[in-house]
Amino acid sequence: MNLSDLPAINACLNSLSAVFLALGYWFIRRNNRIAHRNCMVAATITSAVFLVCYLVYHYFAGRTVFQNPPWFRPVYLGILLTHTVLAVAVVPLVLTTLWRAVKTDFKGHRKIARWTWPIWMYVSVTGVVIYLLLYQVFPQS
Picture 1 (cartoon, rainbow, N blue to C red):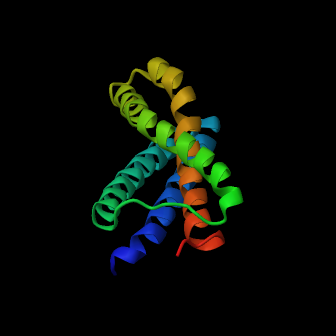
Picture 2: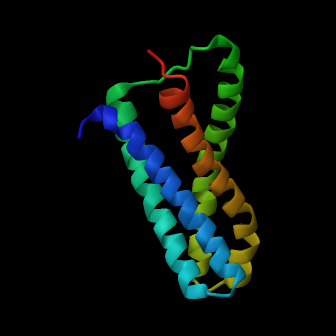
């Protein structure tokens, strides 16, 4: 494995996180709290590993710039901006949501999870979209 493998690994980690988030939602809608908990813990761990890999990649590789095609750049930057802002915002939301679950404050947990889950899902999915745009659809040379 080398540095150039990390973007694909990061996309896989984001995809896996989104799968765990979707399954966690599905399980809690069916009142399967144990499976829900396990999926949400897995999503948290997957997202944490992603964050470490992301930071390592950008520490060594620097900034990635989308340039081509120029007509698509505003769309890409719009996705990147919302992804980045929400990625920063979701960290304290996830930690608070998890903390309330650990403390068995399920009323408080549900209240904040209604905001945390869709933001976290958006960040996970748009992370994959950004990877696809940068490395598969419009590879930057």
